[in-house]
Length: 198
Image (cartoon, rainbow, N blue to C red):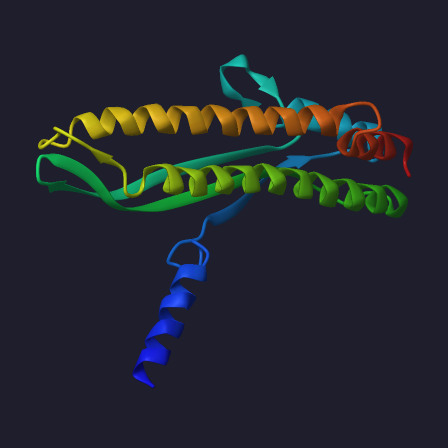
């Protein structure tokens, strides 16, 4: 009986997702105020007040940012260094527009559809970030570097692997935006509907 229970517990642990195994991202929403009485006015307000992206100082309608830190356990095993465990702390922040005052009912209806679609778009960017963190776990936990008793070489190897996964995450986000903003893309259609008052 005990053997069956232990096997069941072991199987449950093996099948558990990383979130179930002890971590999940913290998701926050920050808003910035937009104003206007028509779809075009609200769209223009986003262009004037939206979050600045990177060093380019280009404004976006919305933005997804994240902060990722790790608690890692490096252990010397013989003459090698092994990353025995790594626990991420991931905070994802979505910056979204919010109307600052009342708007006509028909415009509000168009805005609600647009805002919901924009939030869903940014959530995909969040999912891409979570996927990157899961891939970092897979690529690094259990990593062993020989002839590294001071656990220095392993950090160089970790930096290389993390850089590759970070680049892949950024590229996946760019590819997603390219599809969404393309003619007849989902976000492009949402913008057109807002401008046309649909």
